Length: 258
Length: 330
Image (cartoon, rainbow over all chains, first blue to last red; front, side, top):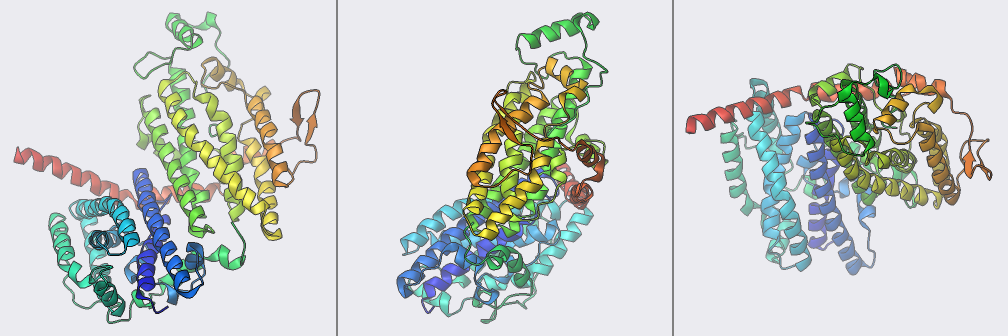
């Protein structure tokens, strides 16, 4: 798969799909009924987006190689090393603070990325991104709101939220670390150089942390950068377990239609 | 159904002679099909019975999210995953409308949830059965939601306005849920021999518990008669059960799977299917807490509530700070 566009679409699709899978774990177990519903809602949006990106990746692959994979083949029949999501989205849910911190970091970057992709020279990418950006604007508002409420809530919630943003901070570097695929995509006008999104992201994170009375983490060590991250197929130990669950039926009953 | 044995607090049906003037006027309004609204006077027994009925229904929606949620992570296609997530989310929404309807009767959602967690409030027996395979998700949609609709469509005409209106909205979504369940069963029935066996196994396990959802036989239920008089129960348990059997048997035939009932046959004279005896000892045991998943279901709800306490406390603390800040700014 030498076409960078396919790799790039898989990154977009896998981020959305894997995070949707994580959010689905919360349904029925949220801290309050309204949150079960909201988490399901965000998960559903992401799942829908993931399906659009993966379907496009599969079609493009078919046009280039003659073998098109469906969204389901891509989701259920690839092993971990072929997944292209950033490590951040595959990390376990943890407590509600960890889930919201992960969502906040991701949503802020996701929104900036989608808004840039809405101007893509690839009309299909632009169309999917424009639709997704509307949904993600709401996700970003909601997760930022929770970071603020928990940060500036009780002493306990403040401590949990601070610990969550600290713990996940090293996984944010991968969101902005470009590689050869990103460079080719940027050169073709399909998508932005991810490094260009970081200043706006950092400004948003700073602003929300300030409102939340949280200290924005400053560590410089980042996981999954320098070409050894999820975007290149190098994952945490957690992805394998997530896929074992997600892919169980397709693996146990090969070729069956559901 | 979702509310299976609602205690009216009355030993027998009240006759008109036993009612006082206010109660007679109330009954006359019900008889004339005038909806009762939250600000209207109502007998205490009516209010309490409705609270019990609506809360059983609400709790069933919430506990019912668990057996289906069990398969969200393992749904076999992205489309099925999206549909299942949306369905379980709808159930959370139904729980919300129903808790809101119960609150119009002067009880708080927190109190209702507390009663559930303390084991004082019931929820439908059906959700104490395990979802062991993907076919169980099909069977729940087809049979459990099918049985729920059977009961809930008449409740759209029940005497209490907020409950009736909540039910209108819920029924629209439930009929979509049932169709998606049947669609899963159809795919399995048309699938590989293993998938077909999976569908048969799910029907074998869910059929009898689905029939129990309608509650005990009419002969054993004094409370149903009072609820019928108040028009918060419009058809009897046995009538609804028969309708369900009559509707569902041809659907199973179409799928090419067999009902696990040797006594099931069409009775030309009655114009209905006859069916075998229900094991009521199983039903009563599940209600008592002895079903295969009672402990897990309740424990999962309690755990979610307890683990989320700090989040709810933080939200309240933050809201209080915001009010203070707005006052200071003003």
